[in-house]
Length: 331
Image (cartoon, rainbow, N blue to C red; front, side, top):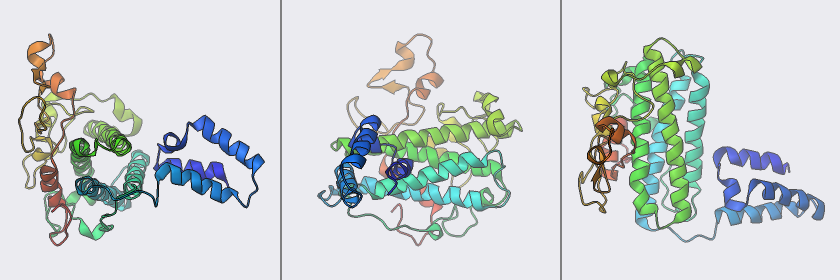
């Protein structure tokens, strides 16, 4: 048993492994001492005990239904993204060679998120893997004839635009689920860690979109500036983060449209301490209008400082456009 290799491989799908059991230094010190003090025959049992402590498998009681519902929505979105990127990588000639490594990483991240979510202790009502067949990335609800059909064939700009819409939906969904998960500190922390990874995916996709519009790819794309007058549309040059409503996103005028990804959820307004779901263009936080109370801060800057959460019903309404009508996903 190669313990160091095993830990390294686990770290690929669970970056928090050291936090679950100990600091990196003490974990490796512990294994080093264990190698001297115990025989190879008992070492597997020792490792099993450590991992059981880390993940609590077999000892956790079932999580409350609302928490499991949040986890299943997150899991469904992860499957939506995983099969999208996997299909894009398998489409011959779609993704330029310079951009492929990053999308391989993103695809693998989504696979890791699926494994982490499916391994949550007490998550007993886990949806099965819906498989690639459950999704229709054309936006045609199973017909394959929706406006996004070329995205996985030969339209790289549309592939990037679809990617941005999916990942931005996921970021808002994770933040929207946080109030339900907050009673479980470990679960909330894990979910928000995934949220931060999804946000980095979005930032990268937006960078690549800017580069594509300027005829640059790979690292060269990072030098291309955003264009506030050209945030939306397939050839838009979005910032690396959402600004206002991003002009409705990469495809604001099609049916389905990407505009709901950046629009308000339900309820859209409420008291400062209430849970509500304003549009990404929101400039009021905790009851304070940032633009009216902070010198030199305009509406675009105020909106860019915060990711707005999105309620489950709105998330499902967006995602439902990209699955076959016969599936039970996002109902």
